[in-house]
Image (cartoon, rainbow, N blue to C red; front, side, top):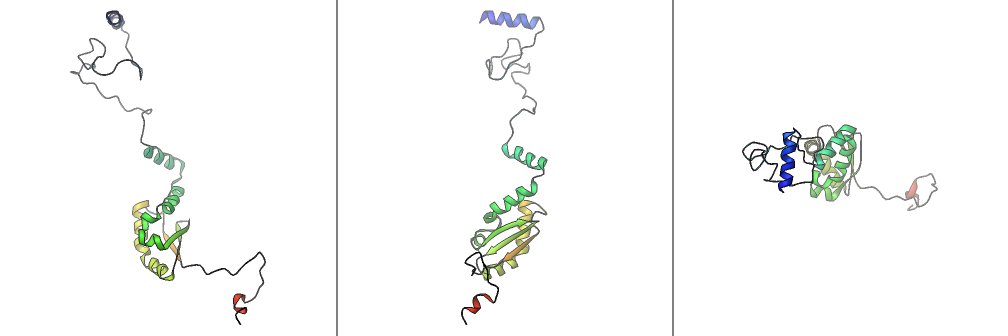
Length: 171
């Protein structure tokens, strides 16, 4: 230990600067001798925090947000956000009876399981659009296209006979 301290003092006398690489050496109170007290750095035992560096770790959300903005992926991410967060955005009652089918050109197509829920959703559209704007940002969703339940299909195969359809059968 004494020999190591002599080598360090000789290096300091020659003007060499001691650099510590990450993961090597000791950390804490025992720094280089003569560095200004127990904490080193010559400030009464306190070390200064290093300046922020581009190589410092960042939060994943910040990195992902910057990536999305830099690449111009804001609208595809918004589409996925509307479809995946539908229950949270509209509420549990509406989500139980109404499901989004598609999202194109700022219009969300919604299919409801009954005509009563389709009517209710049409009445709630202004409030839902305001909620979308608050949660996702302005201009992401501008309108809702609400549809009732789909009628059953009478087509059973690849060929279709033109005519009146199933009404002919029940004459």
